[in-house]
Image (cartoon, rainbow, N blue to C red):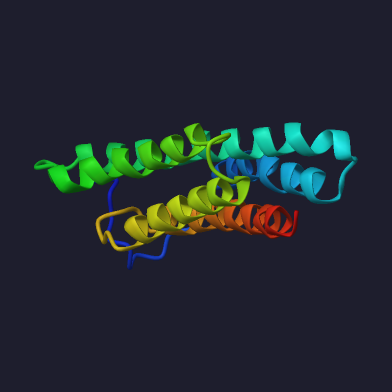
Length: 155
């Protein structure tokens, strides 16, 4: 447990972590811009990619949370359950495609990202760099999803 510090400790993430975060966020704006402003024949594949990547990243964030909590001497089952619940909800929303309007799917996944972010940021026993990294990832996802949501509402 020596590597877990209170969130109040100022610790910057190494460049390698930020590089990975930048690679992980790149599909969000790329897909959103292709959907919103690209050729019409790119819209559906761009939306498919954005929503699928969103659920993959959501599962990653849930897994990171699971790993942080399960490393504790006495893992708290509610935190473990929430780390699985949010990505599962995002996946269920994705599976609703074709049965509900796309705007509800996009909005639901956006809401799942925000719920995961809130959950991550109310836990004090995380390395101080984790909130910064997850905020960057969540911001890229949510801004991209918001752009797509605006376009789906206008369609």
